[in-house]
Structures are given as structure tokens and as C-alpha cells.
Image 1: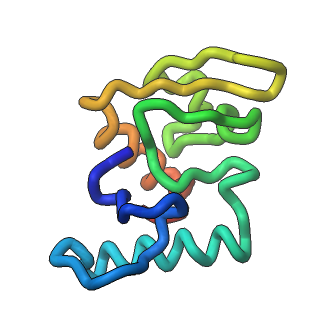
Image 2 (image 1 turned 90 degrees about the horizontal axis):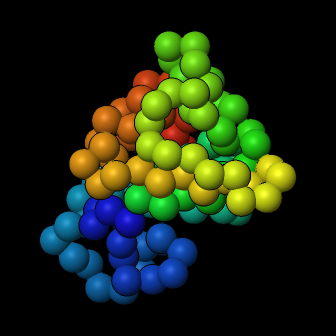
Length: 113
């Protein structure tokens, strides 16, 4: 989990007293995520909230198309392990997270860019 995504709660939603890190951009990302949880739920069908060091993915996620035309699975971004049919573990080294985040954002696969 990235520090900017942690709010002290379990759902990644805003709450509690105002904090200095609660900038407009931070609040905007949280609102987008809230709308997904209670609305579109695109994170269940191939889109991402964010990139973390360990991610559990579906087939839709690993076959998502990046801007360069390759699937996430074939992108060389992180390491993939199929745990069960249709369930993947995607591990991204901490130092690769910004690059990977940008690749997903440029491809339109991030819900909260």
C-alpha cells in the first residue's frame, strides 16, 4: 500500500478529523474510489484502484491491454503467478510501482489515477 492511499480505515474512504495530507487531489481520488465501491465496481472486471507490491488479479486484469498493445501479463511489469484458474498473484517491486502506475494510467486502466 502506498502511503498516500492509507487513511487509517479499512476501505480507503475519507473520515475522521482533517489532516494536512488531505489535499484536494487526495480527496478527489478517494471520492472516485467511493463511487466505484458503491456504483460501477469496475475493479471487479479488469480495472485497478492502484498498484501495490502484491495484487490479486482476475483473468480480466491480467489480459487488460496496455497502451503499447501488450497485455499486462506480457508487459514485463512485475511477476505473475497463477494461483488457481482465473486467480493471479501479481508482485511489483516497490521501485517499479511508479512506472507501473503510469503505464496503467496511460492505458486508462486506473480508476483513481
